Length: 620
Image 1 (cartoon, helix red, strand yellow):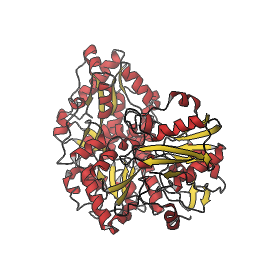
Image 2 (cartoon, one colour):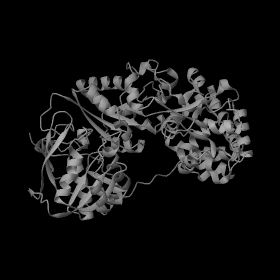
Image 3 (cartoon, rainbow, N blue to C red):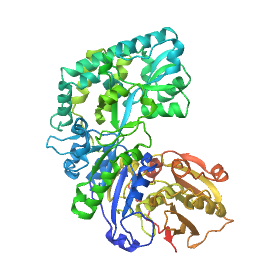
Image 4 (cartoon, rainbow, N blue to C red):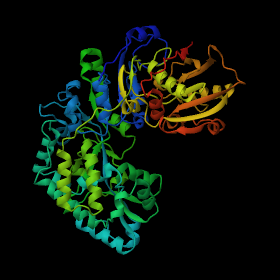
């Protein structure tokens, strides 16, 4: 399969690309440019803005990518890893093939700030550490204290009391415990959570090290000491929490409805969920741990908010390497972790960081003080196999032994992987970075979608694409990764005057000072429409002129318009806080929540991306 990437240096020179998405016309060759891929747009709430404030000498390009190692594997295989990588769904097992492309961070000052028990989970057999865990999301039970009090049931402090409380609630006609077992992560966390003491034994940690170090030629299955105990525990857990076969299909909507409605006493959830339930929904609830035989053997299950790695290529540029080092130190500082978490419902894996605990932790403070924080084992196969086996156990298809056997068989099975079907072979690559006339890659993607829809004008906003357009083969999955997650397509007919108002909403600061352009690479991308704007020099921009086909936009003419993007980036009060004008929103009908499907249809059978347009010009 052809995997090459064309950098298009000549095109970069012609379009005046600067190597960073600052959107301005000035040459900025004396500044260090860093590209950072974000696992989720939540990182844009506080962290990215704070980093820009801390390092005004660095040109950041923040790209909201995908939370999967498969996405980064694709970038890795195309030779296009970003400078800084973040991913939440991570295990050392999944990331092992990327080791040669990532920096060893084991001797950095940042690595030295971690508690050994957590950083060791990321140490390779060679001693290298290439991934650093950001502060911990905390997973356990959330208990409705008012329901406990109303039913006269004591809040449990160990597993026996937990099982007794569940039985008592059921006798009173109250659902004791709900979990969204339809989801893979819930199945995985329930399976591991109920047996953390076994998984944290010497035998358990030794097995985990072996599993995380397995190679494609030597698959590591379940051991015969710890994992039979894990499945035995979960079989007992199914009975003690009064699960029925139908509970295997419970989704998050059912969980929230029953817990908010006071018909369920306990739900699985995170400390962040608990804070929302307390502060937004007004419930009197707290976190409870995964219970052991005694209160001293209770644990909280944790997982990093995200993991961070650095491309090996950074070391070739001394200035960039120094800048990345300083950025990592800032991210893992106390303030940086607060910004990354956007709440005090997390815990830190670092010795020198103290995040004040939320009231949600009042019943689990002993676990925190004893450092009883288990980091979940979350390889890709652990997610999928856990869901399959756990659901079958709940439905009564397996006992503990049958579940162990099937889980082990799936874990060690050698699957025959077939090359995905090639949708198209792109003959020309386009750079991601934007200059005075916009991003060639974003323009090509939006233009292709407009061509497929047949609209006169297309407007892309928010985080639109996740990578350059590569020269070479594309499968449907790879095309899906090219368009940002949650990018919706809306369509309608607008007059030129309404298009002018729409573009002003996307670019100009609101009357209350809110800025729709939180980062310069969130400036609108247009197709069939060109615009000029002024860089105000303070992180804001002002719309100037709009043209169609080189002529001024006619205010009275009516145009079919397609919009592609995620409104929450602009409208939500935790991001841009700039609501779309109500009359314009009424005119734009939701067409599709799968922009990638439209892009795939446009290219299926060997179609080529539309050529980029010079859609943006800056004026003084």
